[in-house]
Amino acid sequence: MTMRFFNTYSRSIEEFEPRDPTGHAVSMYTCGPTVYSRAHIGNFRAYIFEDLVQRHLELRGYQVHRVMNITDVDDKTIRGARQAKVPLAKFTEQFKQAFFEDSETLRIKRADQFPAATDQRYVDRMIDMIRELIARGLAYQADDKSVYFRINKFPDYGKLAHFDLTQLQSTGRVKHDEYDKEHIGDFALWKAWDEEDGDVKWASPWGPGRPGWHIECSAMAMALLGDQIDIHCGGVDNIFPHHEAEIAQSEGVTGKKFVRYWQHCAHLLVDSQKMSKSLGNFYTVPDVLAKGYTGRELRYALLRVHYRVPLNFTWEGMKEARESLSRIDEWLGRLRAVAEKENVQRPTPNAQHQIQPDFETALDDDLNISAALGFLFESIRETNRAMDENNLDAASASAWLDWWKRINTVLDLEAETEIPVPPEVAELAKKRDNARREKNWKQSDELRDRISGLGWEVRDAKDGQKITPRVTSG
Ligand code: AMP
Ligand code: ZN
Image (cartoon, rainbow, N blue to C red; front, side, top):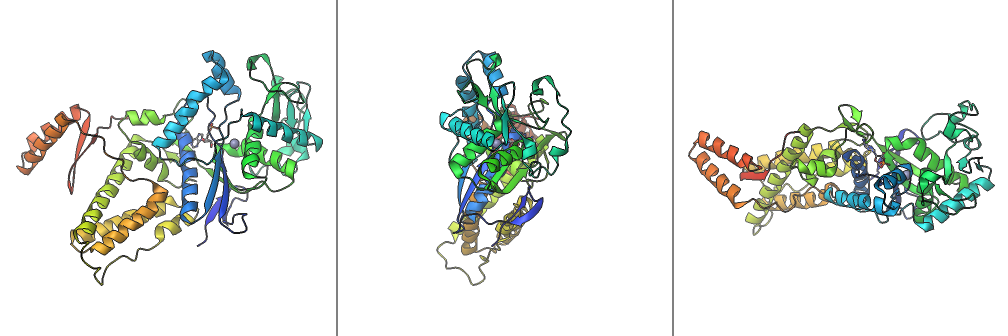
């Protein structure tokens, strides 16, 4: 088994080989949320993609050590706290909690560590790194007291994003807030305190101030995972300048290659535009739940398209997610019934439990989730047909259930315990079932409308009616 990933650094698919000489341990760093507001589902597309990376590595026997940072200090968090007239830590805490809540709703596996940028241990580490960069001539303090990275002194700057920034003409005084920099592309490592920052400041050899966003990730990644890490992920908008800067800072200090595999997921779109806070075209997880969908339905909708392909978010897509999951649920119900009914029998000679490993091999191929799900639904079709013909024995049904259990460690899509249906709705559904048996379609439709009026939806499946919370139109 070999796994292959697209590496943004080389722009090619590469075979995955972790640094660990035993070949088991994998270190993985993922850029986490900036906690100035509730994350939107575009952000969660990135986190679900990272969840898929981790879970598939684990399915293949790797031991993943994953770190996800929390950016709890930057211009936006400081501005938000000022506007809300509360201390920064209090302001960011609510969004940290919301992030963990939403991650749980979407069944995203927790990282092993969630370091916060304001933690003094990491601030100290950032200061040490900046000191070292200055000593090596890679950084300088400007007249505005801030410290900047000198991109002209780092020949590899631009290699990740694949453009040559050092060729940009430095025109001296560029913009008011950049007039002290030597080069337009130089980025802040340490931002000198100003009045707008209020009491948000740390002491440093360059005077009071706060770290820049890029150095936070370099310092926290290296503090917890070492100088060299296997996998670093994020959304494509993180490639430049954020990840480019991380490479420059980390390699500038250690002289060693910082990351072996850079993986970036394409955006979640709305009407062909990136879902983002600034465009105001975003939904949060609670927004989607308020429409009557569940966390696992949203998880499926965000997971089902290859991570390097932009994904358009639509309510139609959410409906499709619901239908796909119902097919899985019904299939599992039928398999369980077959496995139980005949479980006293010995496997028949023609038991079909040689299941092809196509799901896993599709994911080995740069996490080709569409092909993996294609194989799942093809298998569902075939086994359903066999069950229709009474042609699937208990051993085969059990083998499919074991297989599902295995692939579900990656998908995590099994139905949650069902939301209790109110007695009034259950009563109407029973009446509707009777009406259908009597072929009284008019009454059946009327009852469906009454059920709908109470906020529930009834669908007819092979094994009876299914009652779910009604989805409101998008
Ligand atoms: P931020 O909180 O803005 O730093 O973003 C957190 C993560 O979400 C980063 O990895 C971003 O690249 C990613 N991200 C932001 N917007 C989107 C989007 N519309 N689709 C996919 N990922 C996104
Ligand atoms: Zn980062």
